[in-house]
Length: 448
Image (cartoon, rainbow, N blue to C red; front, side, top):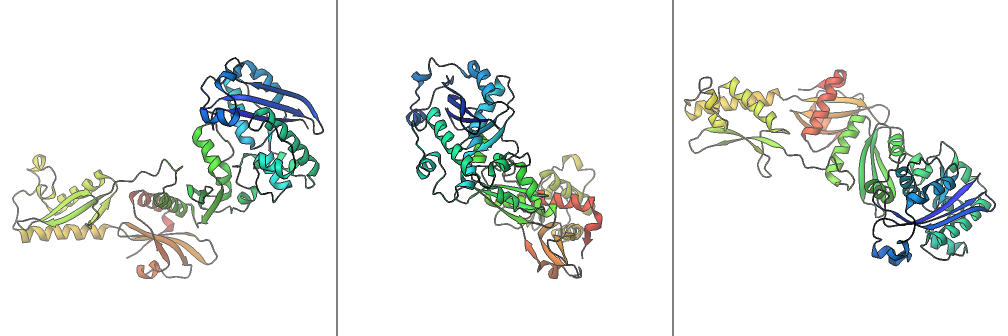
């Protein structure tokens, strides 16, 4: 087995927008160093002042250094078909792989992370940064935060790991079935392995325990693992990987329940990496009020905090479709419903009755609307024996979900509610439930 032990210095924290400023590679056969390479690299972009201060590599130092394209062939030959070894391997690999791809090279390597290996072989150390590991294991390190010095220290660390690997962790890491090298640095393989292969919602948490991403899954274990199989070079992906320190999850009986819980949790927690579903959805309501002449007026407006609508809609056109249906069926006045009457004067009642008579028609229209809104339950698999999962729609609105005994009679909504947890209602959730009930009619139980 031939290893390429690598360290690089860069202008930034992610490969897509950063550049390499220094490369050091030590080729190792498992016993000794058999080849080595070291070079400064001209990054074609300014080196930030704080990085100059940390590494000691200045813009002047790299002004006459070769650009990466000039050294790409030699770097590729040293790395390809070897085991790529680095401290926090995904960082170094993402930069070199990205830079090589831009030059037309496709790197074909297995990876080993000395952070993860040290945690396995020398467990219980106070810290697993390279400097602290070297202090704990009495490994000399010189030229800290320079590629040559850090790579030489990593070589000495790797040799200690090879000598002390009594449990064959290195061979386990190198197996094709092992995905451990792709995991975020602070996330253990055991945390992935303990996930169930059931529907549910998972939460990625940062170092402080704050939720940074919420997702749903048909199989929690498979879905969580898929996040880390292809670690791209972009800023968001790299920051995401660095910020994932822990996972928690909630099991759900069905994938539909998981989708509803995910929607609710994203709106509740606003995780930083859930970018596509965090927008606040505008909701509209159908309101009724009495004007100064005593007429009952219907109006569609954006939902107001302190007013209770007769009915809500996720889309404005949906509200007007329902309102026009009420106007047509119950001979209501378009003008008193705040819709344009000019096109319909020949079709609709324009000369109003007295308020009492007209308001009776409005009341009848509202009752018909209310009666037409369906109440039904959607049943599915539970998470334990002798139970069903249950989602309840009451008069066209999502009430909540939970689990009910499989022996329970579904003839009393109030009894069903006692087993359910209420959840916020919105048009996205309602649409999911209606589409599911249409696709799986045997799971829908109509309620009165």
